[in-house]
Structures are given as structure tokens and as C-alpha cells.
Length: 238
Image (cartoon, rainbow, N blue to C red; front, side):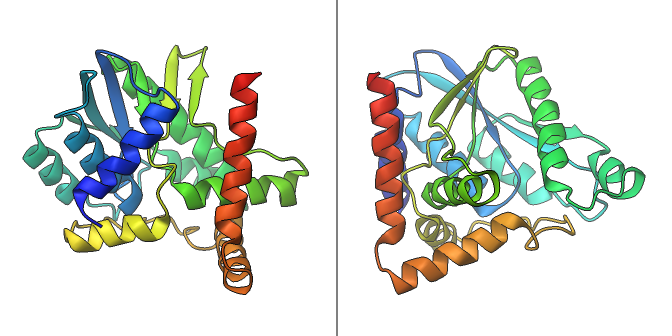
């Protein structure tokens, strides 16, 4: 996938859900993985010609694992001339050593988002862009349905009133395979997650389940996504 195609997906989502306003300062949460890096490149390219002016600021929350190397991310941000903030934390130590959490993902997400939001406000940003793509939206819906007994997933735009911060998800129309294609085409270096729980989570189980469902019932993922977006449109109209 070419950069122009990536930006086209971003612009469609941004326009459909009014994600960007004039003079927004948008933080981009950078994990170092393929999704957040694709979002960074896409938002950087889009801001050059988008009719509403906006700024971007990359932010990484370092969980405190010893084997995380962010040098390549620093170099990418330097080349793109995007300000980059790294937030040092001891989240990994708290979760895996002090508390010894058997199901660490929920607490980790809460602590990580807290640290990220604080850094975003310090940087003077009023919005944060998360790199959730179409597969993430459908997977989250399935997780909610199976494990919580409710129909729920990410919202394209969420206002956090306690933080006076708006969350946007510009990648929501892109499939994970499109993201992979973009990263491979431009040979963008990806930082592997050092978390020991990576690949052994409920989300990974749901990801594999959705993959099987889509193989056995071609197009089921698109139909699920269409049902979700129809529900969102009805909610917005109401």
C-alpha cells in the first residue's frame, strides 16, 4: 500500500466523524509497532494538505522493560521533524514483579493511558490519535460480546471530560493487512513489544477466532464492521 492510499483511508475516517478541527494539536501514541508507525506517517503526510491546520506530537510510554530500544523511533521522528516525547515509567515492575498480575493487560492499559494522557496535556495537545484499525474494532466487539455479554467497541471519537482530551481513531477504515503492506513497502523498522504477555492474551485468541471465521465465511469481518458502523451512525443521528 502506498502512502497516498493510507492518507485516503485516514481522510475518509477523519471527515466522516469530524475528527480534526482548525489548529488542533494532536498527540500520536507510539508503541513502536506497525499500527502506530503507519498512523504517524499517515498523519504527517496528511497535515501537509488537509484544509484544517493541525500539529502532531509523537508520545511513547516506556513501560520499563530493559530490552526496549527506541533509537529507530527517535530517528524516524527526527526525519519527519515531529516532536517526540518518551515517558519513563515503572509499570512493568509494578505489574509483573510487585503485583504479579496473572491477567496483566487491563491494569497495564489503565496505567499506560494515565501516563500517556498526563504527557499529552503537558505537551499542550488537545487530542490524541490511537492506531486502532478495522480489525481492532471488530475484535473488540467480539471480546465484549464473548467475555462481557454486551455489544461494545471503540468509538471513532471519544471526549474524556475529566482530562479535557479528545481521542480519535483515524485508522478505523484500514485493515490490518493494509497496514502490514504499507510497513513492508516502505521498509519501516518496527519495534517488537518486549511484554512477556504479548501474543498470549484474550485479544490474540479473538484475533485467531476472527481469522478462522472469515476463512470459513468469506466477508464476515466486513459484514461485522458494517453492522458496527451502521450502529454508530444511528447513535449519532439520535
